[in-house]
Image (cartoon, rainbow, N blue to C red):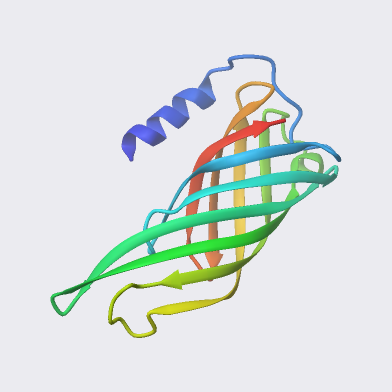
Length: 166
């Protein structure tokens, strides 16, 4: 984990190209992908943001996580898939943040599909969950950036990944 944060710090300190204008403008889109950290395993995620206003983005996202736990000498395996939608407000205009940075906060609404192929109580389940998130991106080129996000609600944790602007 230390290596990842060291790499992120070094990449954010180096300017590789001219900076892109952040956040997304109306009609633009970007792909976000990476992995997360939580108390429910290591999620892998991907999503697309669509600029619908100078300061607002919306888009679909999907995540997958699998984890094991031991209870009374029995190992249980769990799988969680989340299909969701996210909406974020970007503070760059309001706070006059430099264009290589992007700071945002918002809500995510997701449909959770949980399964545990064992004799665990409630071996399958699904439902709707609501999360809040706050995050930031650093664009080191016109199209590529690094993303760090923290959230809470139905699931707690965060995400770290890359962003690619179309």
